Length: 88
Image (tube, rainbow, N blue to C red; front, side, top):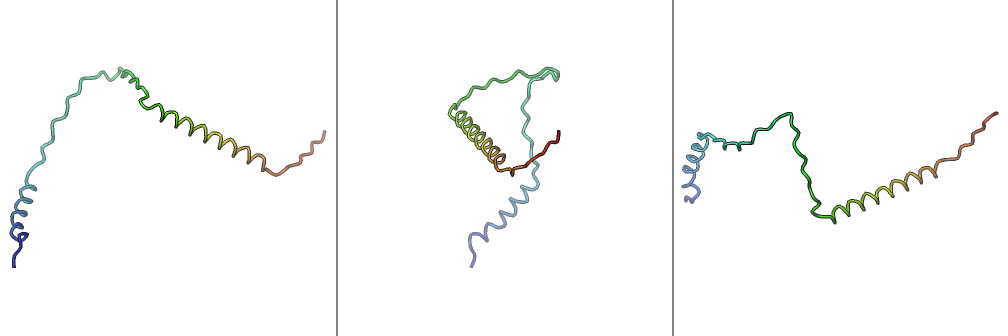
């Protein structure tokens, strides 16, 4: 009892052998214009395309800053008292 897969195996093996013999031809690289290595490129000015993301980032930064400062204040308050005698 043969199946269609048995009939295709020699074709597949031949195709794989042929594929292995072929060399990969690299695509031609895009030609870039000549640039002076001492000249600095001009800065690209980008406009904010989604100001709501900038606003959300600012809110997140402010929230974290408040959290951090509150944590520092709580650590200072929770320090044990220390009595220092100064002889004068």
